[in-house]
Length: 252
Image 1 (cartoon, rainbow, N blue to C red):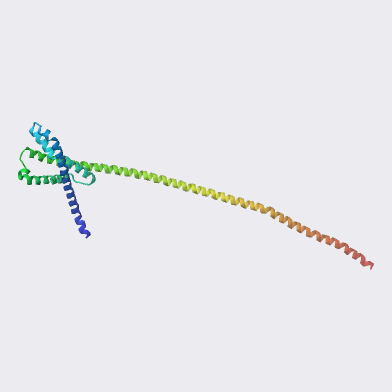
Image 2 (cartoon, rainbow, N blue to C red):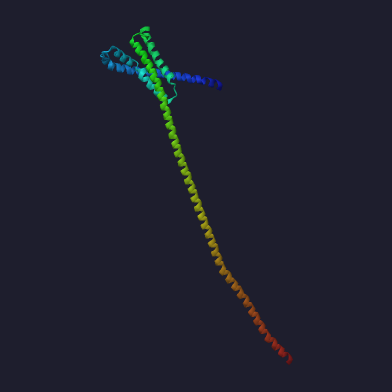
């Protein structure tokens, strides 16, 4: 199924492009005809008043072929700005579409004479058709060129925005790094302060315990000296008694 789809896809693209070109021709013919009728109603009296017959015929042919000389190039230019189109294929196909519709109507109304009258007006109409094709092809080329320039400008703007975003991202990263560094420094300072406080508390407790230990040592020394002195006293008191007893013994 996928292979069939891939084979038919180019044909579908061509059919869609052909339909689009035909649509351009019909739209140009309808819009141009409306504009031609409006201008003809306004300028018919002035055109009839032109003294030169060839110039009068040329002006009439110009108004009749306004769809291919003015409207079709404008539509081709607009279409070429938004999509890829071939200049001569698009211009020729759209112009032939509109001309085929006009010739069909002329053939229905006047027969073969409606297709080619053989006078100078028919020559002017053929020249106007050729000029419209050339103008439409040029319009497609100009549209593609303008689209390419717009694409380049868009890419340049996108690159500029990307560079600005990269600079903003780098600035944000640098700001985050500075913030982390500050937090690390503040944490280190807080840790040093806590360590210093702990050391000072330890020193203070050691200094507080030192006098108590000295007092305990002094008390224990005092107790030791007090026990030796009574013992010496008792020995001193016992020695006279023994002397008395020793004195009494010979008397007996």
